Image 1 (cartoon, rainbow, N blue to C red):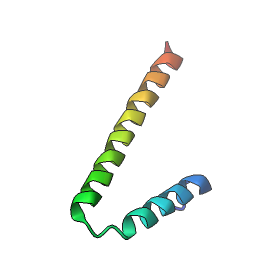
Image 2: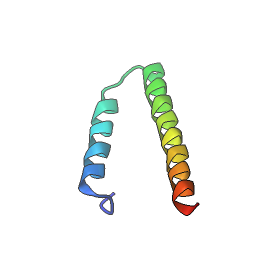
Image 3: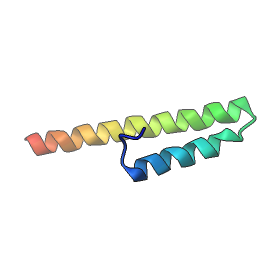
Length: 55
């Protein structure tokens, strides 16, 4: 993780802190599912940006 910029390290720490106290497994699954969808949406956006830059 040390190879990430400080703001990404902080974001990761905040995420870890947020899920640390979730005792309900179903709630944890929902939160991780939302996070995964956000990640996928960002990947699509980055691919579109890259396509636009390469065109």
